[in-house]
Image (spheres, rainbow, N blue to C red):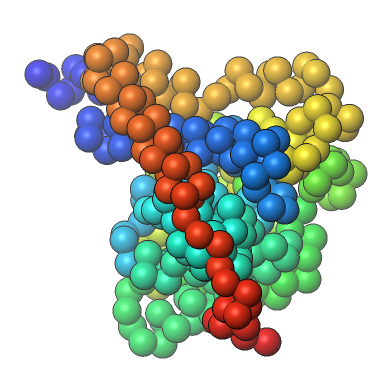
Length: 332
């Protein structure tokens, strides 16, 4: 096969890398769809904030870093964890509050962590990951490990004091951290236009003398390239960057949000957002460029479906923690 002829436009990524990206985005989508169903069935305790529609950000960004690099996550963190290599069975078990979950069923949807994978934790506090990411980057800088940290957060989190404090400190000390704003346009139900007086949040980078860039968050290849550039910049000791990914969440703020957020979003807005599906976009690119065949992609899709089914079965069959384990592994 002529590699130059069979390539996606403006991308030099290998077929294997692109198919892995497709698989990871699909794993996130199917995982989240099943979490929503488990909630509807009354099996899942609490709430979950689903990542459907934003898969390109997590997968594109995590595909641009090394296995031993770090990430900090958010309350909408399932996608980040899967993209960084999280175990679907352990994740599903944790969401159902089971003993076999990542945090032995005590963390739930918003507090999954796996330090061995460089996942420093999802966080139920808006803006809670900023200081953790800067601390991680400071450690890497002090010890000279060469590792970088990706800090994921939403648009409304840029209004938190921790955002400004963290960007300022990271800038002054030129720390190896990349700040990734997943701008889906809403802080719960409040549109960005109502909670912020600027159109592009990447503009806030200027206040701290660091580069800021706006990226199409529905294009996994654009996310990958922008993150790769930022990671190389940070790893060279030049300091942090702020990337703003314009994206769209297909579901509501959380699984219980009526009408998938239809109360505060117009039908046209929701439909237009879904037309930009990052998974369908990459699938189409793979086929049109002849990098892959329908048979190869279907094989991936079938395998992902099998993985999801196994994760659900594992979680359902796993035991709950015993009452006497309540105070174990709890720190205050």
